[in-house]
View 1 (cartoon, rainbow, N blue to C red):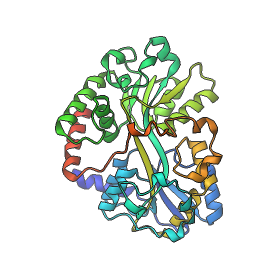
View 2: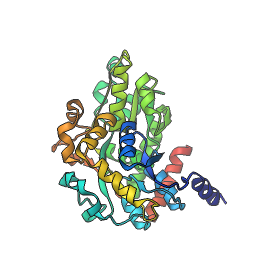
View 3: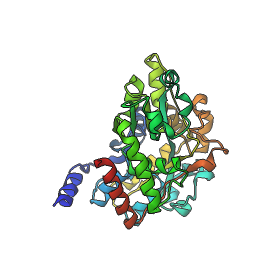
View 4: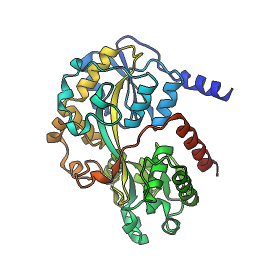
Length: 354
C-alpha cells in the first residue's frame, strides 16, 4: 500500500502535455531566467521546468512511471540507471551541431561510452562552504580544507547547530568514506558501516539535512558550514558580497578528495517533444550560452567554446574548474546494482532515524 501511495503521489506531479511546450526536469539553479527566455524566443515555444534536489529523487519519479518530460539532467551514474531502465533515447547527433564545442576530456565517460545517450551539460564538485570570518574567530579555519569540519566531533563542538549537510545518501556516505581514506565508490559492507558510524557520531552536532536552503542559510549567516555543490557555493559567496554581509563566505576542495558530478542532457524515450529537446540541447551547447550558465549559476563547463567568455574569478576557482593536479582526488559516483541500493537504503534509514 505504501509503495502504491508513493507511486500515485509521484505521478500526480507529472506535467500535463501542451502543444509547443518543452518540459525540462532539471536541478534547481541550473538554468538562468534569461537563458530560458532567449530559448523560448528562438524556438517560439514555452519552456516549463520541474526541479529535483537529488538524483535519487529524479530516478524514483522516473521508475514510478512519470511521463510528460522531454529532457532530464542526470549525473553520470544516474545516466547509467536511466539507460538500465530503458528510459533514455539514443541521441541523433546530426540534430546537435554544437556538440562539436564539447571538451573531449568530458566525452566517452564510463557511464555512456561513445555518448550514445547523453551529452555533458555542466560540472560541479561537492564541497564545503563556510563562513570564513566566523571560523577564523573560532580557531578552526584551518580545518576547512578537510571533511573533518563536518565529521570530527572535536571540531564540531565549536560549531554545534551551525552545520548543514546534504540530504543525499550517495553524497554524504561518499564524503564519510573519503574522510576515512576509502574510495567514494566503495561498496564494501565494512566500509559502509564505518561511514555510517562516522556520520552518526557527527549527526548530533548538525542542524539538519537539506538540499535546497543551504545557500540562503550560509548567505545570511544562520549556518557557518554547509556541505553542497560548488555552483551553489559560488552563489552563496556572491549573494553575501552583494548584501554586504559582515563576513566572508568561502568554499573549496577537501584534501581527502571530493566527488565530481558531470551532469548530462538525456532525452527521454517517451518524450512528447523530441524536436524541441534537440533544439534546447543545441542552444545550450552554444559557447556563449554555456558561458552564461557558468557566469550566472557558477557551474563548471565541459564546453570548450565557452571558456573565452567565462568570468575570470569563477574560472580561477579550483572547486569550479579543477586543475590537472586536482583531478586525481576527484571521483565520479558510479551506479549501484539493486542489491547494493537496498543495502544503502537500509543504511540511510538507520542514519536518518537514529
